Amino acid sequence: MTRPENATVPPGHAPQSPAVGGRSRRGAPRTYDFRRPTKLSREHVRVLQIAQEGFARQATTILTTMLRTGARMELVGIEQHSYDDYVATLPDPSFLTTFTMEPLTGKGLLAYPLDIAMATVDHMLGGSGAAHQPERPMTAMETTITHSLLSRLLQEFAAAFAHVAALRPVVDGIEYNPALAQAAAGSDTVMVARYTMSIGARDGAASLVLPFSSFQQALDEAASPQLSESAQRTRQRAAELLAARIELVPVDVSVRFAPLEVSSEDLLSLAVGDVLLLRHPRDAPLEVTTNDAVFAHAIASNHRRRLAAAIVPAPTAAKDPA
Image (cartoon, rainbow, N blue to C red):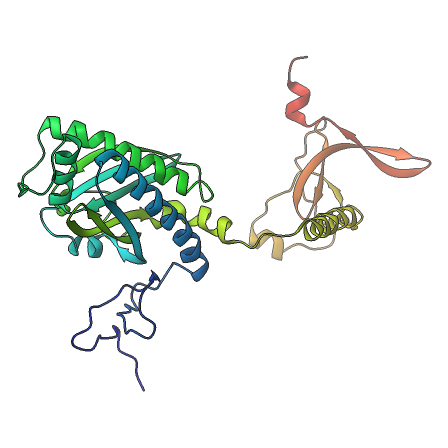
């Protein structure tokens, strides 16, 4: 029995992402693209879910406080997409904010409906937010007002992800056409946290996008199991014993003249009595090697009537001025 390259979804069911965390229904079919295997492990999703739920709670508080109206953000799930596939799911126009995440490379993206973004400006200016909102880019004043809200939300994002990585997010730009919001290359794998968002009587879907490559190492470390103090002591003792035993391992050491290169023809024609010129300078020390790696230099000597080699400074070090 052969497996199709892309699993299909029965009619009437919306396709899901390859990796979903949160409150997706058990047993619901979802699309899996075998050309793009899942990179998010269950441990990664668990770490992200804790951080994203913390961000949703704090964002709810910030929105309610700054807009002085009922507001709510709630995590729906965490998905893996290519950036192009994610952008294709966004309506045009949308309100898109890209931000940097020093010291990590790459950019993040926060997206939510344009009418909700316009309504937030209305609320911050003392309005009810209930009137019809225009579908157009924000003016310079509206952008400045929204920037203060976005900065507060990014502060809460950094606090929620503090156990994953220390971040300093800064707003990089605002865009309204999803195709023009270049937060990542089209084929890059991104982690998408999807939320339900409500401001007053308005409801919509929001998403927070992060580049997987930038967070992979931090997620691996955050997802690793925490050891107890006794387990840490046991592991440390084992490392010390291993290091001590390695120091006692016998190693073959050779003292040699500088290697000589000969042709294959000369090597095959060698006979008893032939002479090979070593071409080793008289005043040059010999090489001390192990496994064909030179780690010291020496001169021929003797010790109690036995041949020996006295370690001397390397030739380059000997020529350095005092």
